[in-house]
Length: 171
Image 1 (cartoon, rainbow, N blue to C red):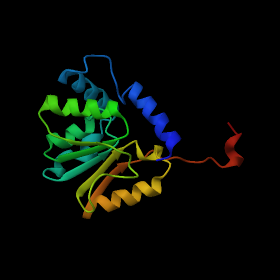
Image 2 (cartoon, rainbow, N blue to C red):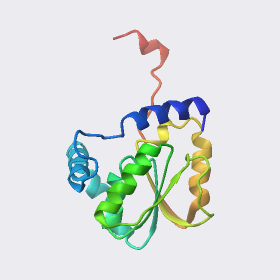
Image 3 (cartoon, rainbow, N blue to C red):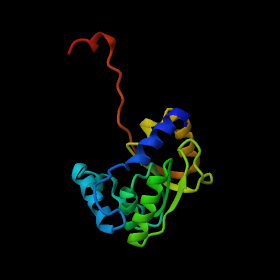
Image 4 (cartoon, rainbow, N blue to C red):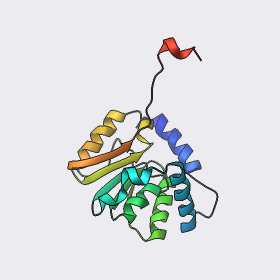
């Protein structure tokens, strides 16, 4: 990952976790509140991703935040793996999983160098993360390297559109 982009992202997410709320971060009630807030903002996610369809499968999440989505996969019976570039997200996700009684496999790594064997993951999931990575071509190659043949990738990207210069000054 581009070093400057990586450092800036680490500063941001180590200072304040994605989706962070006030409260006791040592309690399951805190993580429940984070999940409630997330799914109130995006109520379509459970139906769209159908987390339960991955029971018994290896799911890798790129950019884990506080483990909110990962816990949905874990509750659904998936074997959960995650990578993130920030210690804050790794610690919070590990705590979220521990408080709920789930084991998760977490790694400090960026998506351009996934620490998994070839053909070892059934599904790669990432929500609102990949569009921030300058070397997206490397990320896509890594995703397909770790996916098992026939594996799926459920990535949600925010579309970035360049407004043609002729329209830039019309507003």
